Length: 363
Image (tube, rainbow, N blue to C red; front, side, top):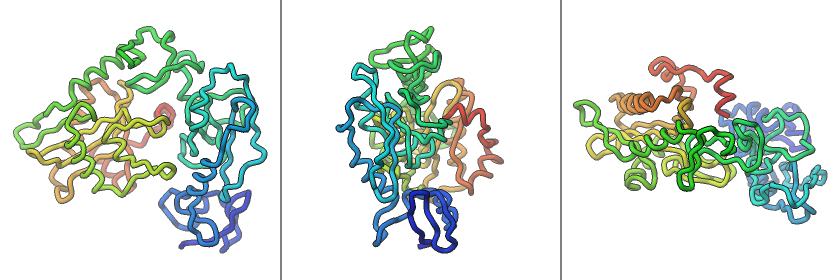
């Protein structure tokens, strides 16, 4: 226990100094560096429930049954005592709207940008929700509101858009000059279609690395041996603390390695691939990556088997992935670097901090 305080309608009042804080501010005030305030601040006489627990309970208790129509600009407030928000500010639209009722009923209970709970505005056509400040809204919209994920990237209009299977951006098919429909899959351009095909051809192909015993492969669930993916998950999970979504308890590493889909774009990892480095039949290195389009790939995690540090395993796997991306014409790779590894990625691998322009593009 680091500090105690009182929950009020305005925030958290610290017992030691009587200062008022929001969740993140109170966590910083305690000296904690976990950066998960909702999961690590506990309330109640016995302090048995975290703020996240309370928000989950509040979310589950909510219902849309009492509304005369479908809500627009739904604003949900989750406070620390799970009390309902009487002044919800809900308005309605006619039943003939294109609003997706199922998506509305399954809206996320946390912001799609910062992953925190609180007072959220819900998208009308997908489960994503956001803090107004995270999407630069000055007030709750009076009309139906659509998030950036549901707007056509060409015309900027919502409704009846389709996500591209490769880059995951949304478009009206009619707005794309060379859109391709391949079975149930929609591709916004021939570039995304070609990238998807070339990746499919690479999956499960063993690629020897020079004269060494090392080889690497690109894997994806459904197109390779699941036992190899299970080995990859076991290795990467052993090298990181559990990475769980504090709202749903979804295991991020499992979801990425096995390319698991989800109804919420925030938790949809179906576009991920797993790269494994093997010495003979032994898996010694693992990386998970997602290629959004020719302009960007992300690699959230890369790991070396315990006991094999300092043998060039990470560099060999990273180089193999980098060369593959270069052949595919991918321009930029982004990764998440822990504070203690940031210097290594900058000095040894020539990464630099993401600038504001790229960060805006990758939200």
